Length: 227
Image (cartoon, rainbow, N blue to C red; front, side, top):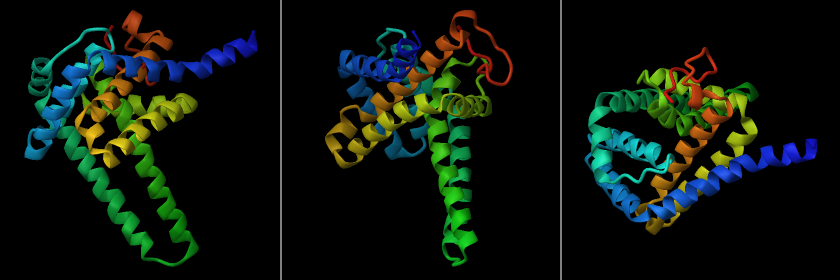
């Protein structure tokens, strides 16, 4: 019985990955269009963050079996325009702080400087993983604030490291392939990562009984989630 339970637990992230791939494949045409719009939006810079939030607004619906097109993306981008730029500003500040400190300590030779540099590298990796969860959590929350979404993402990383390792590696692989294979970048790689993030968060909410009950709970609830 225990072996069966362990096997089931290990297969959960693989099921999430499989469901995300099916979502992407079944709605591929819409997601390709949305992905192209995302690339154009980031080319303008100003529209990049809202378009990203619009993408996650689409994949939130997609994870529930609702196929949405570019109109839904525009709706999400317009609805969360200011929150998206707050998210972007926060990311720029964190990137600046981590980058400056990493470069500074890289110029020092003592062994303790190497340890601090490694700590900042680990901090950067943790921040990226938290981002994987943060926007899907934002879309689930009734309270549309960035900080609680980031906190919920961090709680998920800490509470489910094995789960995070599997789905995070899948997301990193997709983005890596998108970087070296331009075709995948333009044919939906970012959409697939967003779909995977939305599915991963939805599964965590279901596992902890939060999606069904709409519990707002305390620190690891996650906060203010809607059913």
